[in-house]
Length: 368
Image 1 (cartoon, rainbow, N blue to C red):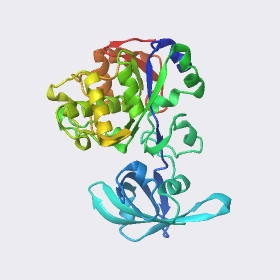
Image 2 (cartoon, one colour):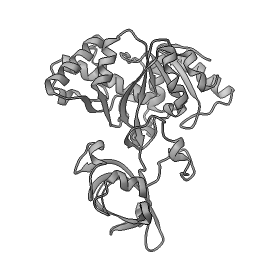
Image 3 (cartoon, one colour):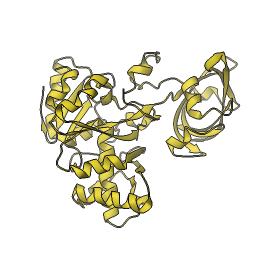
Image 4 (cartoon, rainbow, N blue to C red):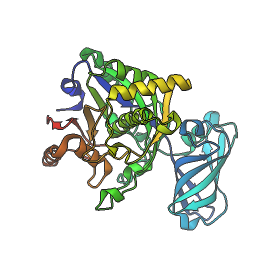
């Protein structure tokens, strides 16, 4: 079927959970006076704030961790570029290296006018960062196509691509089936494209990403514990399941500041409290600390054998082999994912970011 009919297949009176992160213009192309091209890919802020939301509101200067393309041609010195602002004004962006760690660089960005935020600078000077397997330059249309219609908060260097299928028409039709939208945030990092190189999955080191879940979302989940939870995309799943891990740690006596950081193997310790217990523990901790949201990080790795606590139905794209995303799918619905992928290959479905979507039910795949 085609995606505009997705509501036909979703349970009545359910939650539909969206990741409302927004992709930023994280790629910046600098040209050296000698003509060489240096590409900078912003990954994560390190100073004056490591929190993405805060880092984008900083004025000049800021320090970020970044990939640098063609780094051999940039041994030292300051690179600079002009960028266009409104009313035919120009801005100047400068960057210099202040450190290196294996394949990433520590870069200091400064700019004029200094009162601009880093978010405004990136929007004007940078380009949308398409996935590495899309071998073409970003085009103006990608600013629209590689962004979900409900994207709100700047922070991702890759789109949560399952959400790209949703239009405003589909979202406005949700009440017809008593489907209630809920929102959360996982700022997608470049690590999402990191392949699994090891034959032993225990050797794979999972990347860390920032997550935010507002009190309102947690309250809704707790008020209707038996409502099916339909999650849009693997990033949404990892956020929800990390939320459960936070509640679990609170029940084990950990402080909220510690509990909001989910490590790669946290779920596999055998302790599985009821989801309602975990959610209640979170709300109690938010009350105690007078906070309006869970703000933390996750390196959660979901592999076969994982016990899903807050995810019933998953809408997702077709993923690459040897990826942590495909492992999550295998964990969710068992070997039946292979039927879906074989069907997709036989019928020339499109894979990856700009590809087709599939709908999985926990441990029970339904094909349409």
